[in-house]
Amino acid sequence: MRLIQYRAADGRPSVGVVTPDGEQVRRVAGAESTYQLALASIGQGLTLEALVAPKLEAGEPYRALLEAGRLLPPLTHPDPARCLVSGTGLTHLGSAATRDAMHHKVAGDEDALSDSMRMFKWGLEGGRPAPGVPGVQPEWFYKGDGGIVVAPGAPLVSPAFALDAGEEPELVGLYVIGPDGTPWRLGFALGNEFSDHVTERQNYLYLAHSKLRACAVGPELRTGALPADLQGESRIRRGGEIVWRKPFATGEANMCHTIENLEYHHFKYAQHRRPGDVHLHFFGTATLSFADGVRVQPGDCFEIELPALGAPLVNPLAVEEQRFAAGGVRPL
Image 1 (cartoon, one colour):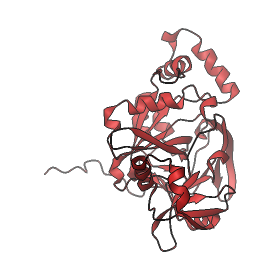
Image 2 (cartoon, one colour):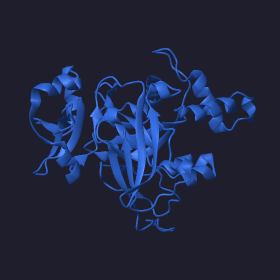
Image 3 (spheres, helix red, strand yellow):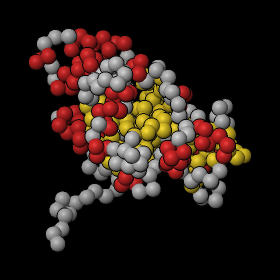
Image 4 (tube, one colour):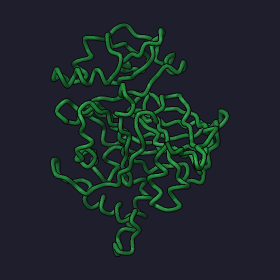
């Protein structure tokens, strides 16, 4: 099932189901959010699909919603501070050539490896344990709360102090924590994790700084089982012209960690299992325009397409006009 959140013609927040042909959106009667539906699904012991199926009303054209900018991120919390946005890195194998190069690098003396290469090697060796068994820990980072998540079509705003504003096409897991502290996965969505790669490259300890940025998720939330091999394309459009494009692969067939292992190492922390919270977790990528020497400009448009997850995620780049001033903290 393909769920979206959007604003109805009268401005009301609504939930819809995209028809299999991608042409129409059928409104879910009485539903204002996927968060509301998730809590009802948990409470009634039903799958989202079973809960939603009898509530579907007449539809409207999906393209019209996209072109009018009426879509919202596919999962939000009524209080954005109770949505945790996070991610894991060094999880993807990349292209065959990249994979071969990485294997050659990690085949030598571990003491001679960089911390990043050592962590990638650990993922290759222990990131795919048997079901129910914890594997090796991945790299983990914090991006922000729900306030940093922009809707499909909305600008991704880079801070005035940023040194770079690069896309990261990724798979995102969408979760709600149940009343007893159990994490429930609603499904998966496309994401643009959007990071400052110049800052990160200066020193790996700057990774935390480079990730504190906006991000985009959506347009759709795909429920149910996820294909192991997901093939898509990431593009940058400038003034109507595509200036960079590259295929990207995700899904467990293209990762050195299982989704279950990445989820375990996120939700093993008690503070990540607070009842009622929402989690949006990025699972990593191996495809970046920055790695190909591309430097984006304000007005460039990021386009991330993964057909198995529905419509593309499209967001223009903007830059913050004012920066926080040094000495801007005032004593009381």
